[in-house]
Length: 328
Ligand code: ATP
Image 1 (cartoon, rainbow, N blue to C red):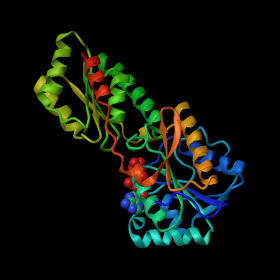
Image 2 (cartoon, rainbow, N blue to C red; image 1 turned 90 degrees about the vertical axis):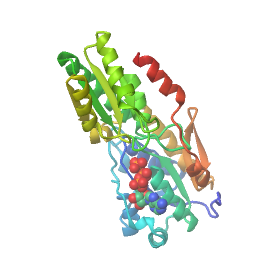
Image 3 (cartoon, rainbow, N blue to C red; image 1 turned 180 degrees about the vertical axis):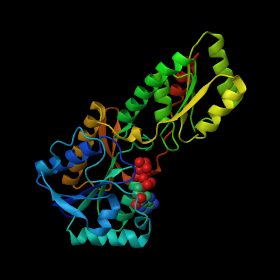
């Protein structure tokens, strides 16, 4: 991929795409303010690639992003745009960028959004990606904007569920988001002191990995048991019912759902979003394009988009082991 812009970048578009994540607003703010600082014009594009195709965009300035740093969601809104998955859609997106004289596009979103960004870069529109998804499932980066806030929401829910579970001596099944990855589940199992954590990365056996562990806990005198189930495992309601039938212990199932996507972003999400947004604009200013801004060892680095998309992410075996040790 050609990693240099041929001409100086004078005007860019910024959009949010895919699932929303707390901290996306902080990232938009950072991009807009950094553009202001470096003398680059910036257009906010509404509803992700949908808005690009429709030409639904407006000029932003430092004031357009006042008072949004603490707000969840995205002021630009987001969407999943089916048309953009086709070559015709990509060509139309490139054409609309020409109509609005955009020299580059900053895409805040997940892996899918970056695949779209790569396709439009291949048509000749320079891009920069900023990882924004609660799932933390993007291979090239240690961290994605929204992950910490979502985990804190889950941790808070587990704490509350535990209070009521111990009063009734129940076993509580809690399903958390994360698509096909167990990052939220595993981290929150440790943070919430869960007895069992089921993740898509590790197949489980109901007798050995769930029922036996819960009975062991009961025999050790515990009054409540929390089982975290990752979205990628699913089937939480049925699982809770089955465990009740086998053990005779009362079970409840809670699907946390979209509350995990909302809320005011944590300090970590605001700071990472700020750093990534500034780094994205610095890259554009230096003519370094077609990159994903990755967070590596507390620093933001720019990685070639094709290389970045090829990196597979694996849940650290140490965290899986730690969770099992701490459950004992
Ligand atoms: P999240 O991880 O939060 O779901 P995401 O960015 O992975 O975020 P997707 O729904 O996969 O979410 O992708 C968002 C949008 O990116 C899609 O609706 C589509 O417009 C575009 N997109 C996804 N994959 C491609 C592709 N292969 N080619 C072109 N565009 C794509």
